[in-house]
Length: 232
Image (cartoon, rainbow, N blue to C red; front, side, top):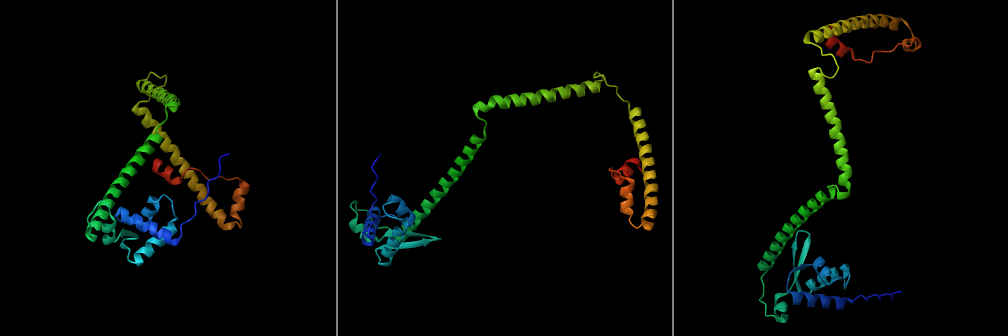
């Protein structure tokens, strides 16, 4: 069994502040508390980093500038310039702000690129896998075959080759006239019954119970639909 890792001892307040100050001076770049925490690779907790940065800023060893909800810290340029080994020049607040704006622009571009890559990934994931293509192809072939048979039948019926008698326009008109006649008669009889039932309902205490006892069923077809079709 592998030996257990020894738990790293948390730095004291002074150690944390000294290390963070040294880091900020050596880097001489603007960082947020999150940037510092991540760049130190977990050497100290996020609350410790936050408190150390705030304390260094309060003592005047760091400068800070707030952008929206985010606070950006940078080493005092006099300290950073004196401690830098590469002889880097001091930068003004305007230069730091310009660099921050540039970083924001780069971040927005990367965010947009990440969104596009995520959309491309979703599209790829929604595409059937190679092992699913055979099953999907068979399903589509079955649907095509069924539709083709239906189309062949309809084309044969239209040409009179499906064994079904074709109706002429006169036949269709005759059938429509007969249907209208029957619907009209149906509507007339229904009206007679409803008039009679209205009289019964006015003179019977429990008309609904009588309706149920007689087993009367109302028509499922809308009377208005029948009236329009039959021109009643």
